[in-house]
Image (cartoon, rainbow, N blue to C red; front, side, top):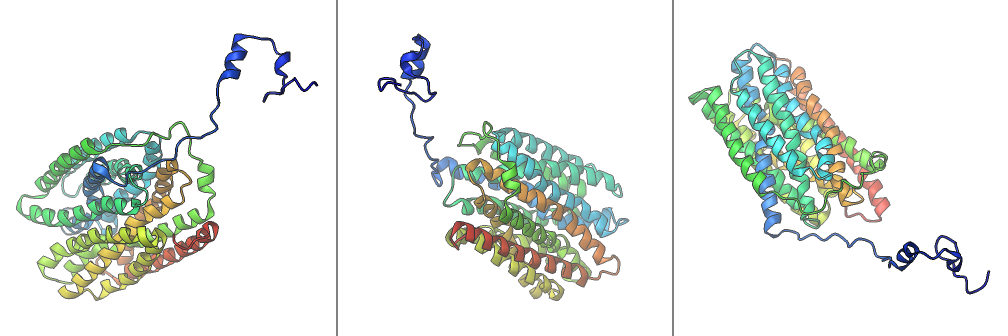
Length: 440
């Protein structure tokens, strides 16, 4: 071959080709070696904080309702469903938690593919509709409460939860944990307000109108959130998420297993604190406001630990809050006075809220690109949802009404939370070795 014969990429000498306009057009096209520009994050801005506000309002409705189910547990056990044991009634709230978390695996993938608005609108309509249907449930018709409150509202929660949380990743990277914590704190604030509202309305206007008042509140807040929340980054629909890579990531799977065990016991006090206070003849005000105190401190628990997570690393904060929360469960047995109950509610609300809010950013740290964030977080919450589904009914069965052996659910809750926190420590150690840093 002569030196004048230049070889292009395809190996055919240019001077041996048939000359054509098509060849000339192909060869003359300049190819830029540069890839797509790196993603930038405004770390806020007006639209960024409006989107955080919209997520806050959404979880005020969805997660706040699930976390305040203890009010319904108490009302159903003592009034409208008193022909059913607490473990049966707990399935209603547990199904809500299961669908809220479990639905995140599917809604997270749909979010990554660009269906944010569809999920928000559809989930809002279903959630509000089923809430109004709950107001029509008749006493001692368990299936009506189960279908409307557990199944219908639960599916709506699952459609809303993960998109409302994942949307923060479009505007924040360095302060992502803080933004997600603010969004999640909406659930704690809602769970602090709903018990006060419902306990008073149940006695003043009855169950039906109490639930309708709550439903109208949902309608207004979710309308606002749908109007002000917007996506910023292009959808990842053209690039499929590497599910095999996600499901074979060993430290991520260990972390997910740890999350399962912590969530298995974490919500036991949320479901049974009001019943515990009622059965130990505490004053009516602490019976009414116990869950409110638990959840109002959860607002701080879902913001301050997230701020610290941006400084110390989300893994470190998650492990600390997980171990402390597991140890604090034993304080429930001593909460037989007003002072003890208030102290327990403050401490447990803060640390449990911290774990719930920071575990999402921990899952996001495993993502290899922005298109994996929703899927990573969604799969972790999907696995944890089975813990949400079974944890409180197991505790209700261990409680064994009408004898009420409180030591049994407390031991169950504490042991599984401490074990789960230990698994997250193992996950962190592997991930730190892989990345070569201990700030995780």
